[in-house]
Length: 436
Image (tube, rainbow, N blue to C red; front, side, top):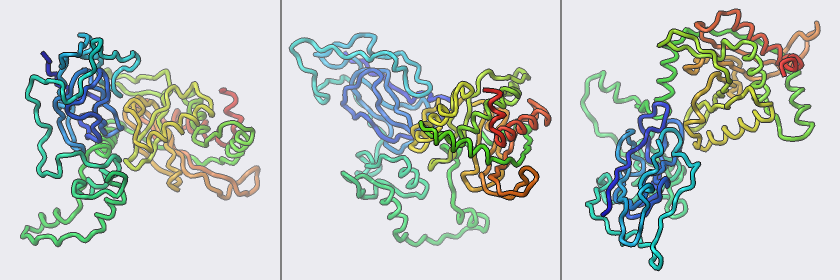
């Protein structure tokens, strides 16, 4: 007799308490293997395929596509050991993997079901399930009985932010797929006149404004920045630097052949060298123990603006990488961020952040520290400016560098020394050779 196992939305790591169902990968009646992905969800940080630790027949799904579920809520139920002609090994009924982080441990090879010789595997509809399968989140209208024909989470977010019901749209893509242009067309369509209501002045003013839910990625960013402001007594210092020689060095590297080196990679390499000289800034504060913890490795975060919002991917062990390796890793993580495929592990564990706000065409900023780190280096745009060079006025490529730091971990002398060393390396890359 089959045993019905309930699989709940697992803890996806880093305090994420909810996830939105983007796409179901299985249907009721499907046979699933141990650790087979059954649903794609979107958290505040990444898109994740969630594998099921049970092998058997899916008897129910909970939640329509677009539904937001809290961690611990039921996802699916699976009848384990169902079917007269199918023998499932006992250990196959559950993987035993702890689903924290990005999915389960795929280092081991998934075991296949054993089918008795001479018998074919039963069709999913023919597998007897000796239980009453619960109904998956009842729909309010007949149109809601099937999945919404939309794949892109960006399209879903656009519709959700503007109150567009995707089930009421007819997609113009292949097989009725709803595209961004379909949602934008719905936004341009004339809206019915609002029904007049009687309200007090404060209520009417509140109703007139647009309300945007502070949740998902925006909510996580808001909480993280608020916590940083509450806990960290930060200070900022800055300096202008002549980046002409750094840009010339990069041009010479790229002219020599091989993979292209980015400016961000060169700045990252300078950062790791500076942190080796000033390790106080590669640290965190343990409030419970009332201690400063200086960290042995530099896990370098870099701010990346995406259509989903600001994310900070992390380059692991950046101090061990050369500019070529850093360029490749920045490119890889940036592409994952752009497509919304960063795993939670790619966004956590940073020890120092490099923030290149110059890409927005601005010179300076006083950014908020990425809690629980102790410092952030900001880089403005590199732009031609008048500059005194070797005693004469010249047009040089100038950049403003800023360092925001936790004043608990060091004083201004250390912060100033770090920033001055970075500026010296920017102005004369040969200074960096001493630390290579």
